Length: 353
Image (cartoon, rainbow, N blue to C red; front, side, top):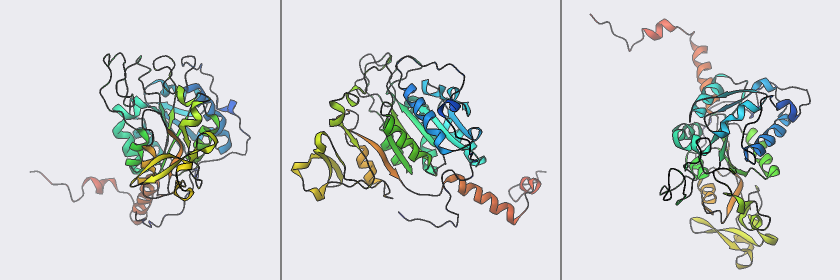
C-alpha cells in the first residue's frame, strides 16, 4: 500500500479536544437517568467499563459526545453525563461524521447494535470506515433484534429460530470484523462484555487512534438470545476457545498455551504447538498496512465460536477524513475570501431568456 504525504502535521487522536486538570471519576460520567435495560443485559457491563475508562483521558465532559441510532444499545447516551444524541435508525455514523468534521474540539463516539449498524445502517457504517472519519464506533453484537422483541439480525447464525424465522434463518450472517477490514477500517478490534480488563484495553487503544476505530463487543441478551456466548464465558471452555491478540507476541492460547495460529498457504489455521515448528507460529502484527493478514485472523472460528479471536486486529495510521476536509477548507479560504454570490453565479449558471 502506498502512503501519500499530504503535508499535514502528525495529529494525535485527542489533539484539539480540551482537557482538564480535574481528577475525574466514573460517578461524574453517570447521568441521573434510570438505566432501563433488562436484568442481566450485557449493556450494563459495557456502560460500566466506558464510565470507568473515560476519566483517564482527561477530557472535559462537555467535549465528549455519544451518538446512537435505534435499538437497546442506543439508549446509551441517556446514561452518560456527557453530551449525546439518540438519532435515527442506522444513521448514527452519518450524523456523527458531520459532527466530527465540523467540531474538531469534540471526541465523538458512536454506539450502535448489530441490527442498527449492519442492516438499515450498513451503508453508513462502511463509508464512515472507508473515509476514516475520526469516530470511535462501539458495535454491540448480541446476534438478535432485542428492542423489537427477538427477530433474527444480520449476525444471527444460519438456522436461527426466531419470531421472524420460525423454520430457521436461511441468511448467511455478516462477520463484522471482516466487513470492517474489507472497508479498510484503520482500527478494528473485538472484545467481550464480561471481560472488563480486555474490554478496557481495547477501548483505551481505540480512543487514542486518530481515524475510524470500530470495536465489536459480544454482548449477551438474556431475554431474546440467552446463552449465545456462554461457551466463551464458561471457565473451562473459554481458555480453549478464545484466541487473545497481543501485538508483537506469538499467537498462542489454550491450556498451557498448547494451541497456536500458523500460516497455511494464503490463510491461517489453528494447530497444536507440539505439531509445528516454533518458527511457524504467527507473531501478531496489528500495524501491517495490507489488511489481508487481519482479515485472515477474522475468519478463524467464524460464527460457530469454536475459536474466537479477541483484541486489536488492525491499527494503522492514515490521515483522518476530518483533517483532510478541514485542510481543504483552510486552503480555499486562504487563497480567496468566501463569496457566496460568486458561487451562485459561477461558470455553471446560464441566463434563460
